[in-house]
Image 1 (cartoon, rainbow, N blue to C red):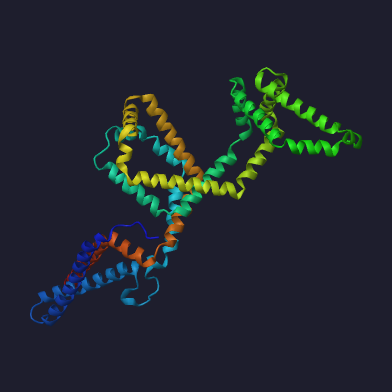
Image 2 (tube, rainbow, N blue to C red):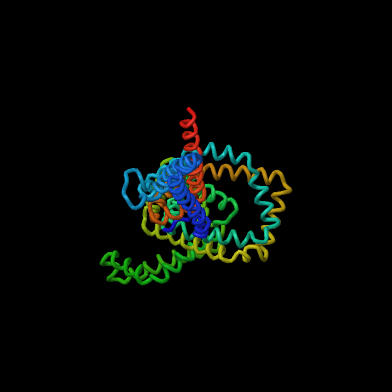
Length: 414
């Protein structure tokens, strides 16, 4: 993966500064040679010589120090040079630890977010999005989604989803949903469907049931043919029972079924043993490869949707969705209660994310830097901070010259 670092377009200014620093060093060397040749002509040339000599020493020392950060000076593998490429992985680990210690701490994040009015900022953007905002946001979103890596982001998504599902106590929630459905009568279509399905299954397999009764009947019944009569009576009775249940919503057997469902809903909410069994079923289902494949498909679908939306920023800003977003932005700016709720949710959400996934984010940073190519990282880092580094060379040359001039003056007049 290529690092997301400053553009190579910064190379030209850095090259100019490097040429200026090197040219100044060469000029000091030429001035030293000239002053050395004319030293006998006039005592003033001694001052010039001292300045140029010390300037060369200072410039060379700073050139060596600056170069040693990124490569071996003149290609010679001097110890403790090429510091950045040799220690790229350690720098990545140190950066990750620095982020975890100083930024990805829930208390620090929540405290800093308390000073931010996130809701108002979001409201201003949604109510009156800047002209270039959608395009820039779209480009940034696409870059992030494509550069961070599908595999790692997908693993984070699936891990978070599975963790949330494991933390969810399904049994009481299912019991509450079932109780609400029973209270509102929403279970009746399900019971009707079950009765209809049983009737259809029995009709479709009538020959099988008759054969089962025939096989289990005694020899006397089979010899007299009463087994056929018995099977017809049994099947007719079952069909009649199912018909009565389908037609009569107050049928006694339907009442028994409803009583059983009510009892089951109560057990789901209050029976610890049943809740433990449901939790075990939940964990077994999450460990099933089919569920992992389903989560992967869910992530791929969500990622594809995000990419499609990000590549078409005007689709978000137009139509009913765009109008709804603008209205929500206005509400965020004008309604203090909504703004307070959104800010509180943002603080809690970000704090929870940091607490839960801080270590994984740190690992993502460290592993990403480890995958970067050393030469590319070195080149782009040098281009990013190169201007300041070349100023160090220039300052070292001039300061060294002034120090040499001062020493020569003190030595001359002491």
